[in-house]
Image (cartoon, rainbow, N blue to C red; front, side, top):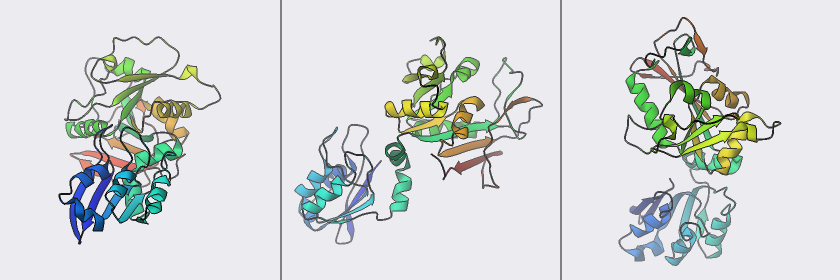
Length: 311
């Protein structure tokens, strides 16, 4: 969400952030929160992302700023969306506003990393997530069908459900659907369910699995429908971009995760290492941890790795 603060005489007189999709933008909410609108004529508006100047779900924020004659605008991140992309700044300047750009840009770019990745790289912000045993397996082999085998503890699993509520979509391969029949929802926390993405080859999708229940939207990506010369990860990214998916957490098995690792198409990896060990099993994907710091979730280790050299 974009954040906006309005300051008059060194005091905050208005604050706002983006409403849910289709609702008012941060600048509108901040301006509306100001009790004495006359103070806006001598105020400074701080906003984390360049104000829009086009009609979308809502009118342009620039028009409202100009209407209230706010003289000074301080902007953190520039908006790479071609509908904005400097046009908001140009309109404000053309109407006499003093505009300061890229103020605290590193912090604001980090805050808006999902949005910026989507428009600059034409793909969603991609988070890889898996849990592995202390000796490097993600599942036992042969699979134990009688009961679920948890590598991590309950606290770690709750964190994963919280993560799901924070991203727009969750992605798995069809083998995960067949073998585990997951719901891919946020059952262990209070929060919105992500859109469920299922990647498959050309095979009939049987709708008996939990992922096809009515708890959340499910999108099928059939990789056999795409150009064979394009990598699987690129095919998936293109389809997600076409569906306006800004962020996705990939929770599939090693095969699906390795699509993204081999193509270097990922932004974060969140890796749990539990205390359990399997004598034999399915090997976990490999990402160099490089003595990275980790957090302890009870007795589980959690590594969060950022990929600073991705595509």
